[in-house]
Amino acid sequence: MVVERSRRECVLCGTSFIGRSFLCHACSARYRRQRPSRQLRRQFYEGVDRLYPCWANTYGSYNIPLGLLRVLEQLPRAVQILELGCGGGALLRELAARGFGKLVGLDLARTALVEARQRTTPAGLVLAEAERLPFRDQSFDVVLAADVIEHVDCVDEHLAEVARVLRKGGLYLVKTPNRPLAEAYYRLVGLNDYPFWHPSLLSPGELRAVFARHGFTVTFVPQPGLTPAQLRKIPSRFLRRLAQQLPVAYLPVWLRPHLEVVAVLGAGH
Ligand SMILES: [Zn+2]
Image 1 (cartoon, rainbow, N blue to C red):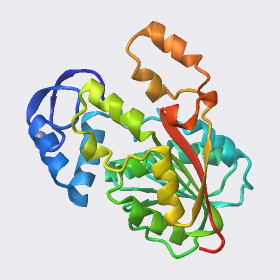
Image 2 (image 1 turned 30 degrees about the horizontal axis):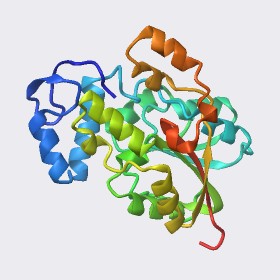
Image 3 (image 1 turned 120 degrees about the vertical axis):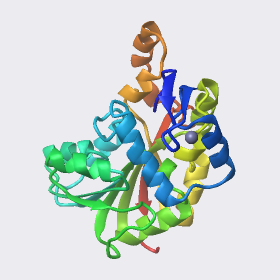
């Protein structure tokens, strides 16, 4: 997420412009009308890693799924975990440090896996899309996706794949922005290109419905506090200090800036 206004080049076409978005005005407008190809999406994420390394989750960890980590903490250490959109592997290393040994990370961007390898992430690393998982049926106990499903082209196709590779009773742990709040924020700050990078935003109700279609029962997990990426969006230091004290764990689901979800795959599916 890039919120400072500056002169920059469009990640896709290289045109110079002043703004906060990743894409120039013409590319933003074009991809509001038409869906980009998967090849173009990969090119975009690799371009973001190259042009904005300080903002990319590939090189840091700004959006920690604090609520989901509390859920993972309760699980036996022998579970097989697949992380989708693993980026530079920060979360996988965190899980390894907590004693999980059977880890696989998947990402669409080659830049992400290069970084994960350089940091000797203790996990199998796979280059693939989250809509076509190159694994056998029922290979994992847990699938984890922090800030990933909003990026996928087709949520239905994606969830069908996750349901296929999970064992019955397995968990899909998800963190994703809350659509109505996220869209209001993107419009407010002029991120006109958001339909390109977040084509599949969901509200709590939409999320529950689409997961149910694929056999998942959803529970929303409260987040203990705002993440560094959320705090960075707040313009003044004073407001940021206030926000740090916000009891976000007590907010109703529809008012949370992002959703953290435990989805259990039904045995009958
Ligand atoms: Zn452009």
